Image 1 (cartoon, rainbow, N blue to C red):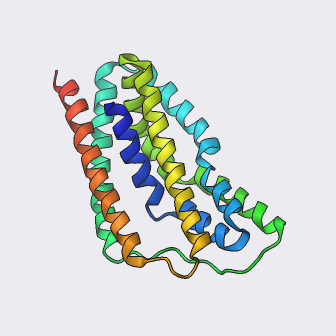
Image 2: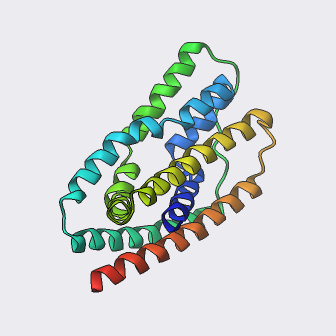
Length: 209
């Protein structure tokens, strides 16, 4: 359950945090409709696979203390990310893009842009090398279902939160509440702080053992 809770917290935080993929989800919804936005939201399910495989392959051959050290670094990275998110929540604006109906070619282009942006972005690589992979490897060694729960929670909320925002945009394109968006970001920052505390407690004790 702990791994699942971590996955949910991290996935939700990553899903609604400002970034190029979220901007493409919203702009794709505005340009091509809800279907385009939902497809772009699901891009991480495809593009993250090589990132996960490479990160886990590297860490799987390392000793326990190396994985614990990586987990501690990941926890510290999440502290920084949480503080950054809380600061951004004060002044964040809902990402905007030009509206209007676009051709199918434009919609497909948006989808490919989303895939390319997510694959080349440093954020998935930083997350999996510093946080996701150490947690996933440690969970797998302890209990494979726990590792599966982490992946399920993470990607369920990562994709689900972006998809939910796409639905909101499609139904109320010009009535999205900035205040509500800032509150969501603030909640994401709190979840990141909680996740960082869990990571530091788990891997810090293993590192000191």
